[in-house]
Image 1 (tube, rainbow, N blue to C red):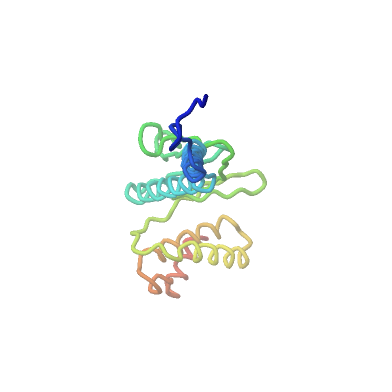
Image 2: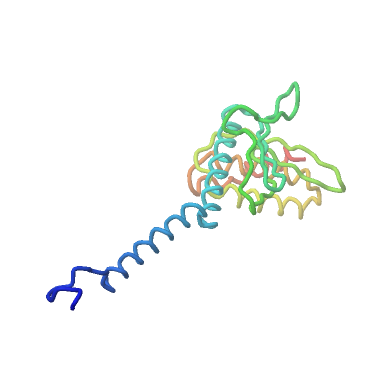
Length: 196
């Protein structure tokens, strides 16, 4: 005696196509979860670099507005900003956007400073303050600083005078737009005289 009635099957299974679609959806979902829980290291590095660049711009603007130097120091996976006060010297920025920050694991920083140049020779550090300037166009200021520094260092063999000269030349460069920022011969002579 037959146990099933003739005709279409009463049990229906999944077709191969349906199984493949389910597997595809599960794979996409697993990939999305993995990407969210472990972000791409390049994207994370880009975000941190952009944050640091914006903080450095903020520190530079603050330094220019207040006329006081702002420094940035880095110690491995941490960095912090410092403000110069005539009565107390360098104090750490603690309660605002320039507070100390830590980088994600695997990232490190190097030291740079904004608004002040520090030079070291034979374990002697000297603070050379920024020259006051009204920033119009900062493009090329670093190039002018570097060229001025090395030319004056070659001529005088005095790194301190070369730094004072280069800071003044860069300040002139940022105070005008475009090629007009290149210092004139009279300005170069005045900067040489001031640098010593």
